[in-house]
Structure formats: C-alpha cells, structure tokens
Length: 287
Image 1: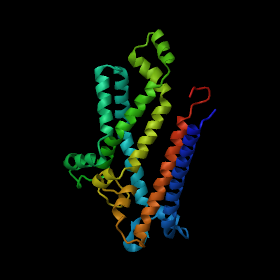
Image 2: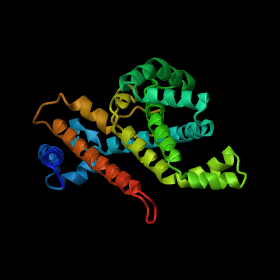
Image 3: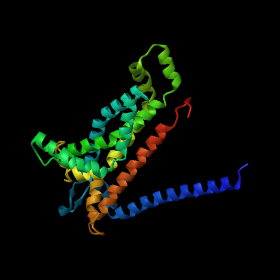
C-alpha cells in the first residue's frame, strides 16, 4: 500500500515534470513569436535559402546552416577514430593501471571549461594552421573543427566505454571458451554488441559540436559565407546568436537570432528523439 510520503513524492515529481515540459514549450513559443516577422509571407523559405547581407535587405541564414553542418561533421569525422581507439584501449587494459589512468584523464577532460579549449586554440592551434598552410589568419573552419573534435572526443570515449561494459558477460565467456584473445573478443564480440551505444555516442557528440558557441566564436573567424574550403573563415548558428544579440530589438538582424534558435531547438529535439529511440532495448533484449 502506498503511504502518504510516497504519494507526496509522486505529486512533487509530477509537478516538476509538468513545469519542465511547460517551460520547454514556452521557450519554443517565445522564439516563434519573436521570429514571426521574418517567417511571415514565405519568409521561412527565404530565410533558409538566402545569404546574409543586411545592407541589401537579405537576412538569410543559409551560410550559417551550411557552416554549422560542415564544422560539426568535420569535427565528428576527426574525433571518431581517436575516440573509438581510446575506448578500445581502455577496454583492452580493463582495470589495470594504464586503462584506469587513461579513463581518468578522459573524465578530467570533460570538466575543462570550453573557454579554456578556445584560448588554447587561439594561442597554439591558430598559429600552427596559419604557418602550415601559409594562408589566411588561421581562424577558419578547419581550426574550429580540430578544436571541436578535442572537445567532443571525451564524450564519445565515455559513451563507447560504457557500451562496451554493457556487453553480456555470457558472450565474453563464450569467446573465452573458444580461445579468443583480448583483441579478438573486442573486434568480434564487443564492437558488434555495442553498436547501438556507439551510435548514441556519435549522435550526442554531433549535437554537442553543433550546439557549442565559444569554440566557433573564438576560432572559426566569424565571416558569414558559404565556405569554399576548410581554410575559409566562417560563422555558425550559435556564434551568430552571440554576435547579433546586441542589435536593435526591432531590427531584422535581431529577429534572425530567434530563427537560428528555432533551428537549433528542432535539431536538439531530433537528437533527443533519436537517442531515446536507440536507447530502448530491442525486442527480446533485457532492459
């Protein structure tokens, strides 16, 4: 029988969930209202396809969308092999000192503020890119993607390692009975069994890269253009919001940041739905 304290706790949790959902919906409604002047009369299509040239009355965010997708995809492409390799290395060593030390270093990296990565990028990575390619200022899509890959790698490593640890012990015991060594168990048992966890880590890392503000703001150059190469300066959706926030309240420039916010809101919603769908146990699988 449920007692008074359990009922009170259940009601508190229900109210908390309702308030959280209401706040989320209110934020969406607020952004819709603020972006409405730009979205009226077919403005959504223009917003998504036009370039950003306020002097000509064009307030499209198409270059920002392309840049955000490009820098996030490139950072993920750079970080995935390193993250998977580190997770496999930790898995191979297990609880032995090298694996434990590496895992703790990765955990420590997740707590480093983003602005620290940005400063390291400015004083170390930007000069290296500028001197190596002998062109531009060094603040470009490639620089931002490289530092973003460092930022999102710990997230992927920890998710990959967690998915490895969830592989049923019976599978590992069967591999041991067949005489498989550590590398064979990892390659033929652990990785196939952990594929959904790996995919969840990749999706969350992509969302982290797309939603980060400071790295793109400090290292990508903040030029509103569709990049012709990875050495071009660019601006992402999040950096655009941070830079235009001080514009006149009624100006189209100011309204555009709410359109960017709507795009990011919908993107994060899709990410959340995908992660929850992948986290559900398959039919016949124990939760």
